[in-house]
Amino acid sequence: MSNAGPERSVPPAASGGGGAGQRPAGAAAGEGRERPLVGGASALLTRRATGFAALATLVGVYYGTHQFWFELPLWWDLTWLCVLLIPAVFGLVWLALPLWRSPLRQLLVLALSCGVAAAALQATGAGVVANFAKLAAMTFAAWCFLRFFEELSWVVLVAVIVPFVDSYSVWRGPTNTIVNEKPEVFSALSFTFPVPGAEGGAMLGLPDLLFFALFLGASTRWGLRTGWTWVCLVAGLGGTMVLATWLDVGGLPALPLLSVGFLLPNADLLWREVQRARARARSARDRRAAPK
Image (cartoon, rainbow, N blue to C red; front, side, top):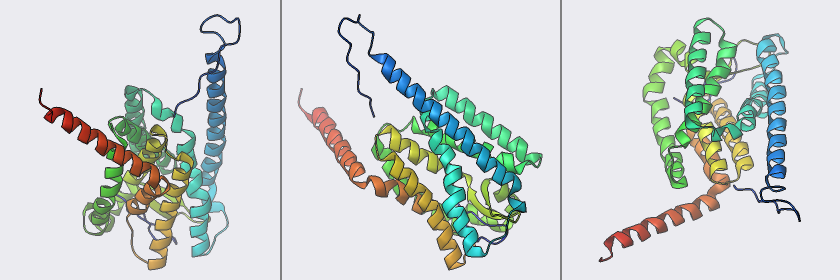
């Protein structure tokens, strides 16, 4: 479900390996090698955790007080969302990215726990906090799914197919039905980006959150351009909102530009990987066909 929509002025937008250190002269086996790497990794995780806490605090303050801020014209509202709020929200996913390596069972427990918390918070009217429980649930669920992708070519295939599925859903399928006939259900199954000075904002379907985390996790798992992938994914979401506003439509699917955001910055790397996968498949077929 990828239809996102505003409640006030913003039209709906649809929704590697590390090197090993050398052992110093005279050191016993196992000494002087792992300590620098472990220390470096620990420092990086500490910086990410500190950054996550700081960014989460800023985003939380905005979500809790945005209705008391200054009001902006429509296109300035859109600029605020695309340039500041959307990057800030998905910056949390970027900072949490090392968690994709967590054990599958742990990721599954986190996804289910956050999903239950989101449902409970939504039911009690704590929609602001529920927003971020939904984001966490979809992110951890995406990283669970990532464990079942054996080849990068599988992710490429998904990125090619899902835009068509999403487009059908938004324009003629279940998303269209939910948005037009049961808006309260869509509100419960979406993430809100509020505009300053008002109660409303743009809304993004939960599957879009899932695919954002899936594509970002895939970029780091297979050593792609993770930084550029994040930038292009965020730009894809912003671009969808801009198009929805410009075309003045009730909603646009977000997954087409989200998929482009994954494919475009990694096109050459993905092509080489797809070619290698084809070569491996041909080699396997030749081995099976060879007389014994």
